[in-house]
Amino acid sequence: MAPILRLKNMDDEIIDIQGLKGQVVVVNFWATWCPPCRREMGSLERLQQATREHNVEVLAVNIGEDLDTVFSFMGMVDPSPSFQILFDPDGISMQHWKVHGLPTTFIIDKAGKIAYQAVGGREFDHPEIIRTIMQLTD
Image 1 (cartoon, rainbow, N blue to C red):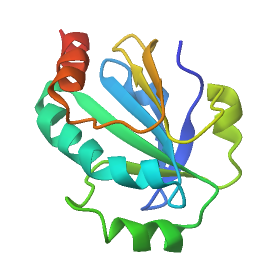
Image 2: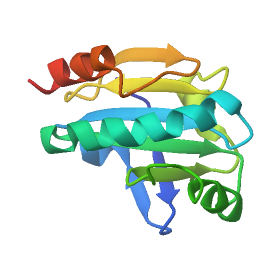
Image 3: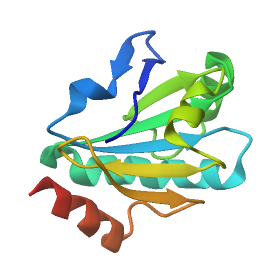
């Protein structure tokens, strides 16, 4: 099962992964100082747009940075992210999820189990990745 993930978003609202059961959830751990993290943000948004109607939710968990730093960076991302940006200023979720480097991404199936894990940057709008995620929505 996916570990606990309960963090505030950019609007200061608590997002709890437990409330997303029944959906496929892409959880991406990242930071603005991480070049591969920066590169994959646009593709995460394109993934969100391509899968939104199929009950897929993208969560990007920022590790160790403040709202101003992240907000400033998000203004440079094209296309502009519509997915949830969550904040883990102390990096505690990295321990629960056993994240050892950034970026690390997990794909959680509808039952709340980790289906896939990727360490390092990806192009999340690649047809093969979209196809893999869509298979989990069936």
